[in-house]
Image (cartoon, rainbow, N blue to C red; front, side, top):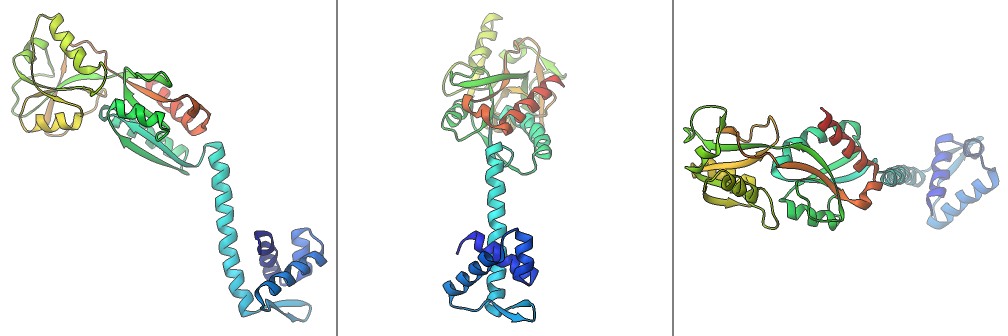
Length: 294
């Protein structure tokens, strides 16, 4: 038995005669009859009974017909999925993001899902070094990470600069207002995000304080923004965080923009060079570029 034989058999059942099935399939009647006899011989059952000029399917034939419909439908689905995968328009696309990129990723992915409804998007959260490792291991198709990206095998597209925010629980230790200064922050216990590997946000914060002639009191270093927010919510100090512009980091916390902290923090879209060939990745890059333009 093969899929072609099942298709021939299914068509005979639906057309109720070999002559009609032959016309629908555009093949001669003798080979079609031979395929039917071969199926009956393989299973040792009669699949049809003659009824005048037509054929009446037997109970065994009806069972085979139902199973053949299921199998042929599944084969069509597999064929469509594989062709879609080859074109990059179906299947699964894996995306990584740092915490500060979650809002940006959610916005773009919602639009992409509407454009590519047949794709399953899987979103993973990790710190920058882990995202780079996952990209190189081909566990991710692309990622929204933080500048700088250290792996030379990865392509990058710079996204919008991040706003630098001081975040604390209420009632706060900082003066009222929507902004604050380094001098005001230097007097308070600080919670700062620090990469496990490489130079990043933590080092630039320290440099900014040093350039202003200030020595900050860093009470906590965190590798993850979620941990920094939890500490801030517990009243352990003021968290200094890079935040997507216009985004509220967490309800119940007050955030102020740091006026004199240089805004060098930037999200980047990054992917392994060979993933350029996947149209879904190309569409994602275009979607993020549109986000920059907006």
